[in-house]
Image 1 (cartoon, rainbow, N blue to C red):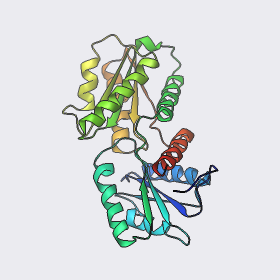
Image 2: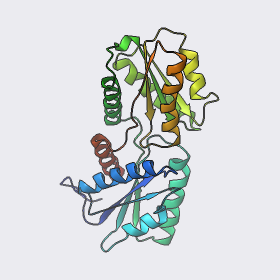
Image 3: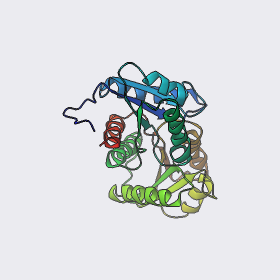
Image 4: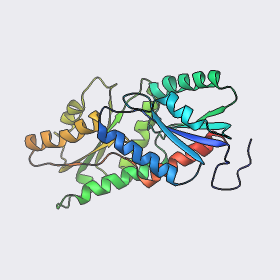
Length: 261
């Protein structure tokens, strides 16, 4: 194992940042900004990127771009928040294929971002931004925080994420915090929100727990407009998804370093 004595990886390493991919060009652009920020930190001599679907370069093309002169090690860093089929199945399968075709290259696989402290701070920043976008002064004890995240069929993963997101809301002083897992819940986010609104809230902040925009983020943001018409006495505010916040870049670097430690 290499002995790392500086903030930069040895020149024998490359990083491959992998995104899910999106049919939404805006989401792809946000991912590319994150990649450029990661590359701009100069943590690694070579930092390439790719997508699992919907966009190019795909994962095999991205790994090929990493295999330049002197590269002996590639760290695959998923630009993904929560574990799921992509992190448990799709990326490991691509790693196995690459390892068979290029046995001379060591491939390391970093963990997804999860709900690490730095990521929770990004959520707090997005929530603060949403609150400042309103001229009204409504205290947190009168506010519902609704978080929509992409769910996993791994119930333990969902449980841990929900636990940490609930703690985020409690520490931030919200009256109530609820997490809706898109794609795995038997209810729609509209149903989840509707069940909560008979309670006495004066404000609802909707936080999409996604890195980049896309179908689900835009659906979450559309809830504010729909429910504002139905409940005119409640203020609905949209928080941004997490995007390419500098703390996200910090956490990607941390995950890469931990994968080889």
